Image 1 (spheres, rainbow, N blue to C red):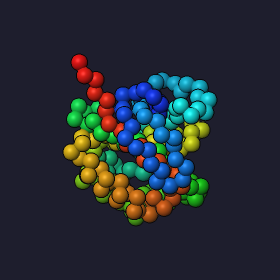
Image 2: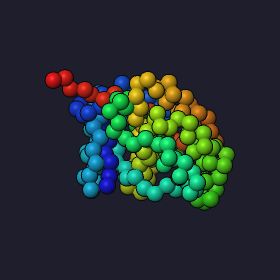
Image 3: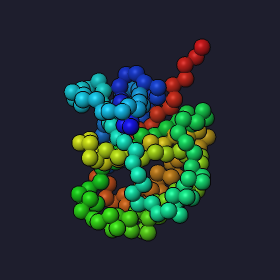
Image 4: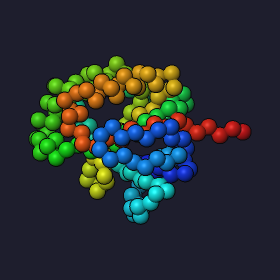
Length: 187
């Protein structure tokens, strides 16, 4: 299953902001659509009117069994009614990151950066899903999708600020922060 995030002029999420954190930005688009499909459609011709990012959920790469059990016990699923705020944060890491072994990346990810241990306190208020896209020829390695209630917006800001201060984030060469709110249709 693939998840497609399409910035354009229509979609279920209204874009509040698109901010480059490091590297090239994405063009501002007023709406974001999020769809799932069994296959990836042909790449869109580059356009000033839309952009498209595709990723796939995968197995947990740097998570050990006890950490997975902790996460499973407290994390919330996507699509909760109250979670009308969201963030799409595409990330590309440097070649230096990919030149490390899996074991070396794990040490930076958790032993030094405490990615999982430090993030647990933000669950279940913030639901998240990581989509891998490095091997799909996409411009990013990962698409991180977070959903939360507006009341938890400051908690989300605390989470991303904390993660961006870690050693792991020193390997990020491109990151864009896309903030959206759920479009609510009135009857």
